[in-house]
Length: 322
Image 1: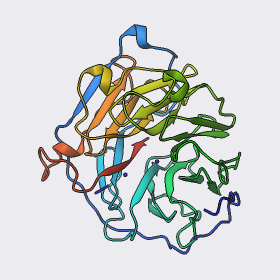
Image 2 (image 1 turned 120 degrees about the vertical axis):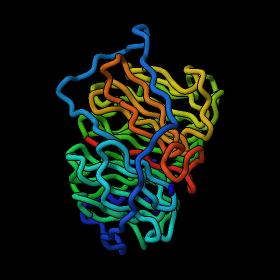
Image 3 (image 1 turned 90 degrees about the horizontal axis):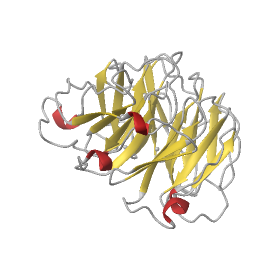
């Protein structure tokens, strides 16, 4: 099971891939153990949550070999195990939580449940591999980003600029859509952050520490879903807040060291909490209060059949289910 180009930006929603819509049945069993839930002290709260946002009912973890682990209300509708010829790099849930997309390093897109196939880059000659994938809030479009910062849009995803063709200080490792869906952020492995559309630049890890993060390379960025700012996560469990993005803690501050590199950080839709996920499938949940919505539904190390073991293939993607 497993886990965020020509240098020209493909912004047309009509961009097509040679890879067709495919489905497979990969059913995961119930998870039992393997995570930490943290409620942040009031002093750490930096922004109120929105009561109007949908509440997550579960989440989907995806491995680099296309295996899918479903927890809570995540729909068991298949995965790309044995289908994708290249590593899977990310995932996103549909707006109603009844399906999800998986994306591969060549830009191929696989759809499951009610996820719509809107195009992909499979079969396209790329300057650098695809490293990030994100869906629009209405589920009618999605983005792919390459390690060189090239951004590709499909469906109703709007192109607001990219870094393709520019000399970067480090490869891009992730993309996150702003709460409005009218912008996005990119982040490099060194912690450099880039804002596009209505995304407001609010600083980066390099400026925060005057150099690389003391908690290891950067792996993920998460836009604040209810306002300005974003979180940036590191391999060793550091999570840093910029621009007023709500901060509720991190694996590093919790004193529970991850047993594998953190590969993803994701907010609950109302901003009342977030999850950090390790490459071994461990899930860390952090909430503003006891009523925060980043609930723990299980993790791969505790899954029946793999008790006490990490995922057979590294976890690379995490998608909350609404």
